[in-house]
Length: 373
Length: 192
Image 1 (cartoon, rainbow over the protein chains, first blue to last red):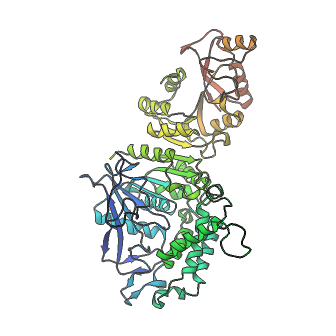
Image 2 (tube, each protein chain N blue to C red):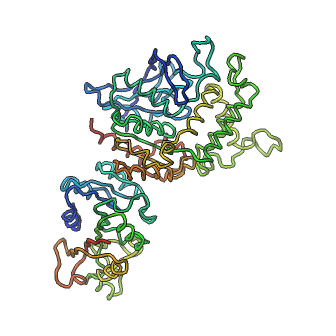
């Protein structure tokens, strides 16, 4: 029986201890939001950590009481009878440190000042996210995850888990990702950041105190990001040159469906997402480069890893194209690690990792079924 | 293990070997090599349905196009590279054969023998051969480069590859007399 995990509840893990970031900055205490689905077995061997990408959260599957529309971001993957089967696995979702869905981040109150951290919240990195997740695992009594899975920057976390805590996971599932951003990727992120920091309502990141949010900047940042998540073909198929009005307006209002869609996405996103978090996430992406400490030699940087890997890429993903995934596969092969690689000819672009493709989900289902607990 | 060449291949793969199976299909050879010889490794396959079958068979599979060579694999990183009944579907056979000998300490290649008497008869009768080993019609075959035993041995000579062992089969049984005429399936073990 394939079903939903049903109504779920978010939980809060509290850590009354300092957290030191990769930058050297420190905060005195922190909290992480998380959700769990399924049951941790007696041997504590069936836990799977799900790491989210840019705009998602700890809400991976199911809905909240009274919010039936608020479906978890990977609900098509996680649930009873689904590829990541909650009848067999204990699945943990989490909102990373620096996030804006309840985990300690720029919107949280700085105990030193009694005001939100805002611009004073440290710049976060993928390494920081994973280090914080390891504390969460400690608190949940999970010494070793059966698997850690993520897509896009969630996949960077799954990879980082294998590098930072090689003995604490059995499998790393790295989907639609890259071991480092290209100049073009960083360029897109910089445009997004500039849109935010040049918004007059940004106030150097201390906009909470002014009772405003840099919504215009965040909106443009989201519109730019969204373009990179879809393939040219997918966008053409979905929107084409379909018009929103009867004839060309000869003005600068919405003519085409795609313009309306991007504006809508921008409006929606800027209403719930925190600009300071957005800035930090894009930096975390830019900074991630595990080979950096090894003279750019990815194979040497992967030598620490012990996990078995599943790497997945999508041919229409031009943001993190398959060649980046193949580079990771090569580095794993060079180290004689166990790895499987799926390179799907799927049309969805970067966002394909969130879609339900029978080949993709079939492979994930078989992969999880073969994980020995 | 339905295909007759697979048992010959399994006998040649030493226990505990590191193997790379190119065009591995549903991964049943790799699974068999693991269960029989504790030989482990990876399959390379491009077809979506076959790749999914590999996942279900619990073998390591890499979804890659063989036509672009074996760039992901280091020199001498495998004890044995296998290309079973896939050679005839490859466009750039010279490149791939060189790559197999670069990546593996040895290579095992099996292919349907186009020199088999039935194939010769069918060509003499003015028709493209269709048989158990060559089941497709000329218009829907995935095969692009069919060859005979003699042709393949010429290629090995051209590439400087040494033929270490050869088994020629007909209906699953070894053929020792007139192999290029009586054998329908050839299995070679070659090294650089």
